[in-house]
Amino acid sequence: MTKKPDKNIELENKLKRALADYDNLKKRLDKERGEIVKFANEVLLLKVLSIVDGLELGLGQFWQLLKEEEVEEIRVKAGDKFDPEVMEAVGGEGEKVEQVLQRGYKLHGRVIRAARVKLG
Image (cartoon, rainbow, N blue to C red; front, side, top):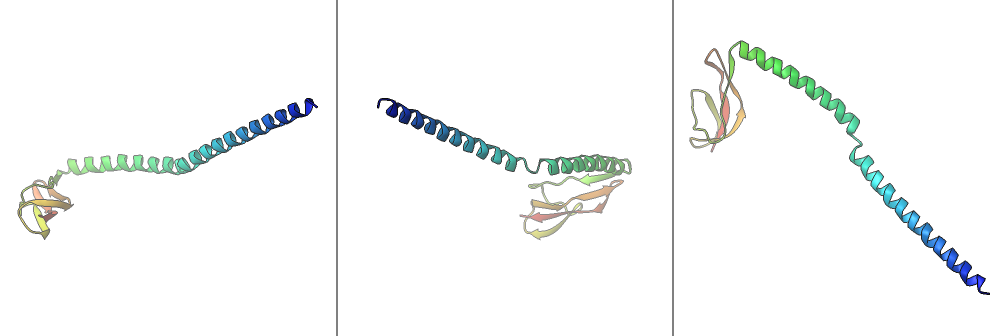
């Protein structure tokens, strides 16, 4: 009769190990599932980044061409004093630039498009 309780203890230990293994497997699968979701867009994003690299290269060449043709940006930032010679106010009131809505440009020193700004 002493063998029966030992058998129960052995079965109980096997059950505990099986439950622990199941719990560990569940945790591992949850972690892997999270990783899959987290990196699901990786292939798509790598393709997009390749396009961005190409666009940056193209934009760099474009800006270089504009510079060679003596096109320059009218540098305006929030907080600057409004200058009607190079800026067009399209909203707001006051004498300070609150927001730059559209960049302005000069060609050979002459304004070809005023910077559009909101005043505040």
